[in-house]
Length: 231
Image (cartoon, rainbow, N blue to C red; front, top):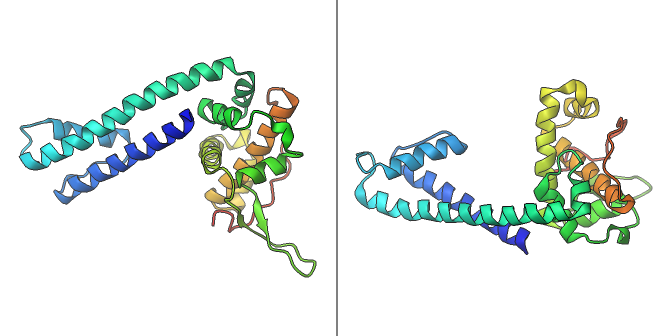
């Protein structure tokens, strides 16, 4: 429940920020993407002497600023609680040892899947999350399509976001991630992220069922995903 509420608050904060940027853009006030750009816009709204923003507009946008601040405060409280629970949960701490799975991802998986042994294989677990390719096979020919997206959307998104962070590290240090470097040379970044997220899900299943921390080892092959995997 804490994770679902956190997810809702993140979406509400994003909606409020997007609305804030859109309204200011109508007045020709634009800032860079990211937190620094948002700080610039917030300072403009807070500065009553800034003539670029009419008084009525400033009053309206102040409601969005208050909503963003409220969401941020609530998110901080929830994430503090999640961190405390994570530190008390052995499965969650084991999951955090997997590259790309942080405290939020680890605690979400541990809370959602208290008994990973109900899945026979790591692929079954990945399929339950909805991060394996659909099979459209006929006439003895195997065709792999886009991922099914029929499982847990929240866990799937956390795994893909975590995979994207690992891909950024792979670009910066290709010598440490030979498999990912080769994959990125052949496939678009989104497809590579889905392939890595698929592998992360399988590793998570192994960590949960064997009750062991993740131990890195050379990867020689990638999970089979087509170029349409992100469709």
